[in-house]
Length: 293
Image (cartoon, rainbow, N blue to C red):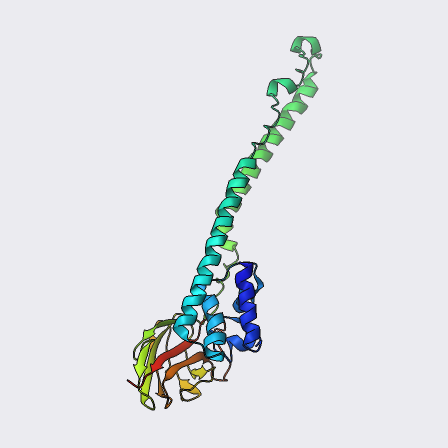
């Protein structure tokens, strides 16, 4: 894994050592600058898609190497690094299993071991009090009657309060509204799918289809070209107004270069003020071969 990251860094230096932000934006890598930086740090093996975008913009687009040979060479290097990483992970799991030991069971304490002593028993006969006088009996009876009346009144009051509790409850506040969500989804290429061939100097129309999967309507939005290349096209293309759940077909007129080669153009969505949207999503792109045959 570390050796693979070292090769990525050497390729970056060979290509002029551009910044990761430049690789992601101006050079048109279909991966974020943080993903490209993480790929070269060697702490973990990047996905093949991220590794290929790192290599493609430098070796193919920047240094002009053959795309097929370059992809085949680096795919083999990535597969070797992945195999080594899988073997290391398997060895680590086996070693950990051998060292596992069951934890000692906690000491058991029974209820019988902590029984409290029983309280002493005193019989009624042992504490007999002298009989109260007639006057005291009347006082006790009056007190008992008063206590009974108080208990009955308290019960009636509680019943009344419980019955009418719902009549004076404060109104339930309305539920908080769900925040608006802005998101897109690439549906597919309508014309000139990746790898299509065009003749040198020819003009053609590329069409993509995307879907609004958010809760915000799109208005005043464009696709903005983010890289340079031999194919000529407008810098921005208008996106039709699109409501949530609907799809939009976006067309751009492209002119192929006069010489055979590869033509790739990358686009990102912008709002009405020209600010880039969805920075963590891969750009929409055109990828055709210019052939003289």
